[in-house]
Image 1: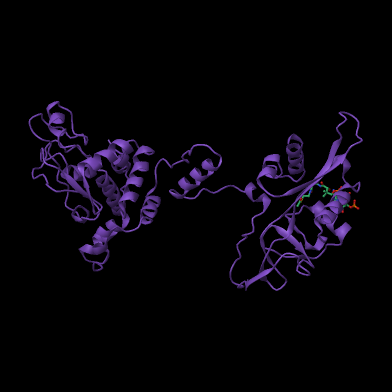
Image 2 (image 1 turned 90 degrees about the horizontal axis):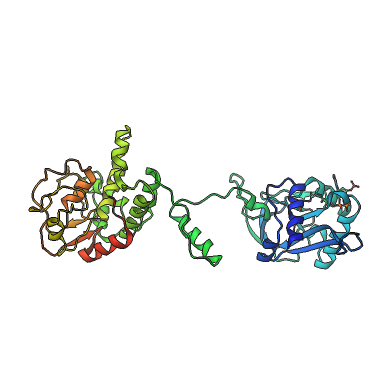
Length: 413
Ligand SMILES: CC(=O)SCCNC(=O)CCNC(=O)[C@H](O)C(C)(C)COP(=O)(O)OP(=O)(O)OC[C@H]1O[C@@H](n2cnc3c(N)ncnc32)[C@H](O)[C@@H]1OP(=O)(O)O
C-alpha cells in the first residue's frame, strides 16, 4: 500500500496534479486494474524496485462520434500512467503498455484516455500511430477507429442540438480534483449523513450555515409541500386579501418544514433566533415584507407551550413567561396585540390559541413585533384552561408543543 501511495504521489507530481489520483485506498474502492513494472535485479533492499505503473479501468462514458451524435459506451480507459523520471524514454512505458493491451485483449484505438498529458499523446502517436482524435466535451480523448468494432455495446442517443451546450457528464478520475460545491441547505444534510454513515461512523451533521440569507430562507421554505390549511388561500383571487395572504402561506408550507427551519435558524444562527430582525433594522437594513412574514410565521410555529397545570405555579414563583414579558405574581401575563396585518389573520400560517387574551399589555413594549404576535396567542393567558393550538393548519395540544420544545430546544429566547 505504501508503494502504491508513493507511486501515485510521484505520478501526480510529474503531471502537476494538486493531489494523487492513484492510491491504495482508491484502489480498494473501485474496480481499476494497476499494472506495475518492477525491476527485480536492482541492488539495495533485495526486494526490487518499481519502474512505473499503468492504471486502467472500464467506465461508462457518453462520447461524441464524428457526426456529433452521443454514444453511451463503456470502454477501457487509461486512467494513470507513470514511469520514473530517471527511466523515461527507455522503452519501459511501451513494455508496460503492451503488456496491458495483451492482458486486457484490447486494441489501442479502442481505448479512451483520461485527460492525457503531452508526453502520453506523443507516446501514443509514436508507438501506436494514434494521431487523429475525435473531439469530446469531457476530459476523455478517443481516437479515430474507436467506433469501429466496438467490443462494448454502443447505445446511440439523440444527436446534440447545435445551439445547446453539452454538459460534460462523463466523470473522470480526475474529477475529484475540482473543488467540491456543496448543495444548499437542506440538501447538504442528507449528503453529510450518507457520507458519514457509509464510513460506519455515527452520523455527523454537516456544516449548517450560521444564518440563512433571505433568498435562501425563502427558497428553502418554498420546497416544503403546501399543507391543507393553505389551499383555500392559494385558490384566492389575485390582488385581493387572499392573494396577500397567499404570499405568506406560500412561504410557510408544511409544519415539518417550519419546525426544521426554525431549528437551524435559532440554534446555528443568532442565539436569539428571529431577533435578527431588530438587529438588521438597527443596521439600517429593513427586512423585506416577505421575510418578516416568514420569520413571524416561524416564530408562531414554535409557540411556547405550557402545561396548564404548571402555569399558575410559574406565575406565583415569579418566573417570567418564556417570552420575557414581565408579569406580576397576581395577574397572568398580558399579551401584546400586534399591528393587525394580513398574516396575523392567516389561519394557515400562525398558531391560534383557542381562547385569545383580550387585554393589551403594558409590559411588552420592549418585545419585538414577532414576539408580540406570539404573546397575542399566549397559551398561558386563560389560566387553567386546557389549551390547544392550530399550527400551520394542524391541531396540536399543549403536551405536543411542550414535547417539541423540550426535545428540540427551539426556543428563540
Ligand atoms: C491518462 C494519463 O495517465 S496522462 C499522464 C501520463 N503520464 C505522464 O505524463 C507522466 C510523465 N511521463 C511518463 O511517465 C512517461 O513519459 C510516459 C509514461 C508518458 C511514457 O513512458 P516512457 O517510458 O517514457 O515511454 P517509452 O520510453 O516507451 O516511449 C518514449 C516515447 O514517449 C514519448 N515521450 C516520453 N517522454 C517524453 C517527453 N518528455 N516529451 C515528449 N514525449 C515524450 C515520446 O513519444 C517518446 O518517444 P521519443 O523518445 O522517441 O520521442
